[in-house]
Length: 306
Image (cartoon, rainbow, N blue to C red):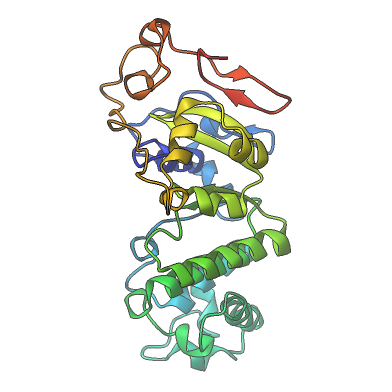
């Protein structure tokens, strides 16, 4: 978690190796014993999808606008079985012109029937209304919440070892947000998928997380269990985030905002990156960058106060 501009989404894209080609990953991305930062680009396709999948903040920019929902879910289903999506449309392997997917649910190719049943069940699982109708719709014909449900249905089909959810509820209303969070919790429970949930909403993080990593200006400044983070935040930036929650001040005066803004990565301050905004800054903070120090069995903080 962290403010906008902290580097949360960039970190998720780095794990997936989806950053622009001119980008360089420093350090390691360890996944199932492999350093993904060293895996050749062509082999990364083996890890995306069934290994690591990602749900983005705005699914409309991720779903193909000229393919129906059913076709895109069929493509995802084919990844898990090694069947090419083009083979699923008819016994001849070619998509019938003008034929809606709903009429292809019972096509004779056996693997096609299996995939068709799987995608309808996946849409039912994420509570998309009228899944037999939804499979024939295009992304722009669905609401934001329905599009996000389609992305979650895709994750159900892929059953990845790790799911990166990049602020998937930000643009949704409160009711839909609660429904999406419930679906993500069910996905994690039913499939055994681990999840990295990226968010700037501390209350949402409190509902989902087991552990929290707080990011600021491109680096992790604190990492600990959800209990320790919420009951005893150590880093001044983490404390500042909790102090700026509006609900904390319903009847008790003004909110305490963090002064200033997150620096751009091309113009970072010397020493600790947070020191220009830190109420506890010392002289050393403007000179030396603090290392990530261990403060407990699995707790870490990047601050000269510890």
